[in-house]
Image (cartoon, rainbow, N blue to C red; front, side, top):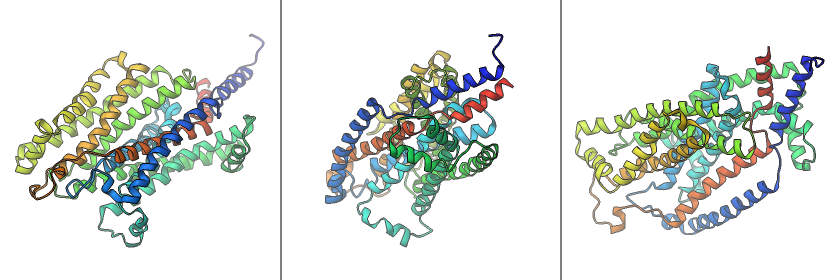
Length: 443
């Protein structure tokens, strides 16, 4: 070893890193089998959407009282998870935390997938999607729905740019290093690489514009979930009429997003053999981040209940009573204790922040986060100011139909398909950033 020059060792390590991170870019049999399963499941779910298009929203469990069901619950959940790209890449990245580099692209892919599908979820809630263009043609600036659509589109565009810009060097590397690629994939890499030539000036341009995007996406990301919360808070309904809904939604979004990233980290680490790059330390630090955002979220959950309970307004008391000991109490306490308090306490234990335990905890948190959105959307509508009377008995409650559940499942299938395709088209860990960080550590 004494005769080996230091630069040769560096080149060898660099070559190993390229090999490890590029070998995940392949369309193997397992990928095709997984995509085939997802495609079949999607076709089954789309059949139920065809029924909804044919027969209208009568195939759902929604009615005059509960006009927002699991579709809107799902939309709020998807918007929540999509905020994680901003938290990981922008906030932590700009603060200067280097440990986020191997997982930043995972967070950005999750953000893109959930933000893209969130827009489709809105369409599923429309009885006449053929009139979607009316929102653009006749939308009023006074309507929070117009604000929401505008900010969702803006966030999707910025999220795509945030993912794509630092991908350009790795796309060029894939085109250069990978062999046996299908013709369409080779052509795609050539187009998306934009003539990248690994010149120092190009890296300077990438870093400069990437930093601008990191700054721009922070207010947009905060606005997207704040505006979504205003769809509820701008009304006078008990349970929604609250000025804290903006930060309450944002803090809850960070909890759901962190859980989603941890689950994805575990999957990619185990299935792509990336233990050398996504280490136990990354899971430990993500666990600590999840504890921090959960603590903030617990504060807002307490605030959501204690303020209206103290005021003791009749309709607010009825709504809180329904959550505490009424029709929705079982789900409410399962979400609060099993999906927030217990995971928070468990994550305080270092052993629980190991890959497998923290992934299981994150799955529970993510499922609870979805049901939390359901509790925000549905029970409030069943506690109106006017008593529910002179309507069919089924209007006194809400139960999603098979069609609603299938269409909701379709949205999750689409998210999984987008994440899978992106993770197989491009390196899931930024190659050039990891090589650059490795070089900096050696200096």
